[in-house]
Image (cartoon, rainbow over all chains, first blue to last red; front, side, top):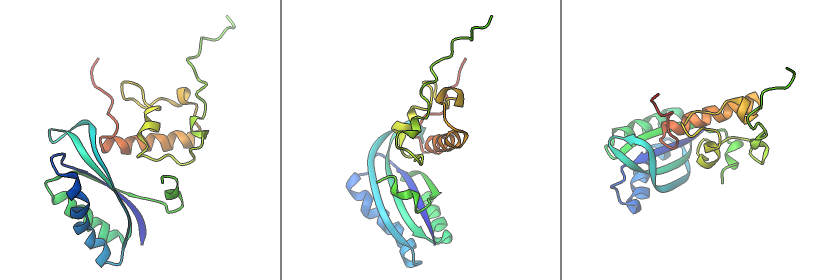
Length: 102
Length: 77
């Protein structure tokens, strides 16, 4: 089990209220494999510093997970298949350091 | 011929020591201080960071760029 940090950029045309629930359905992959979702943080709309797929804005969301490597890989794959997901990034996060950002 | 060339402000020395021990790539306002208006990463000569800190900052900026939080160096001329 490892700590991961997943950042997702979603299509700006989505309704921000629907984001947390729809992300949650993806997170079932983590939960069913014994992982744990520690935090789901939706930053809301932000300007992108450059265009991604002709979008100048994006909705950011950050997920904190404890999970097996395979489950995260699967999560990343499934998110990537979604057309509303502009970009994802998965990073390992050291547990001790995670306390820095509240 | 002894006098040195005027050094561009170096006194920014260890901005990171102002409380930040681990550079977070999501902290855009902090990272913005380490890039020029062209979007380039400031050199250690300018930032006055230690090698370890500079490396942390550089990787953080690169991660942030991938997620469109920070710009890539603008092209041209």
